[in-house]
Length: 107
Image 1 (cartoon, one colour):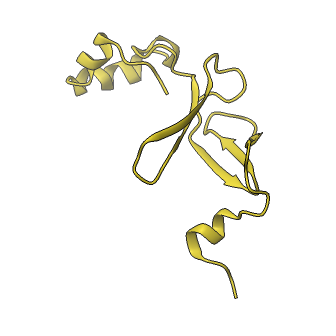
Image 2: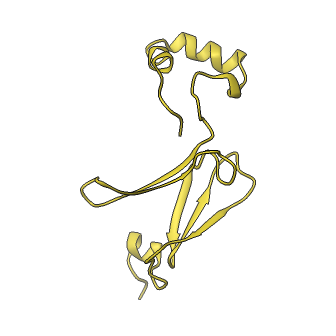
């Protein structure tokens, strides 16, 4: 999650510039401020945002790349994180299994 800026938007139109930047400049100096901001959004079935969870300082869960709800707990991971985060969900169902939702209950 990173904030958009006019400079970033311009660089999106210039693939050669982005390739050179990725090779020559450290990630901390790229054109995307707040690159390490952690964010997870919850949507309804129509794509409307119901809730957003943020780690704006990027201290606990920066660059979240995956998450999974299981038994009322949200598990958070990222490819550059050295830990798995857990967040109990207010109103979360302690009996809900995400695999049942995706693939159906086993007989």
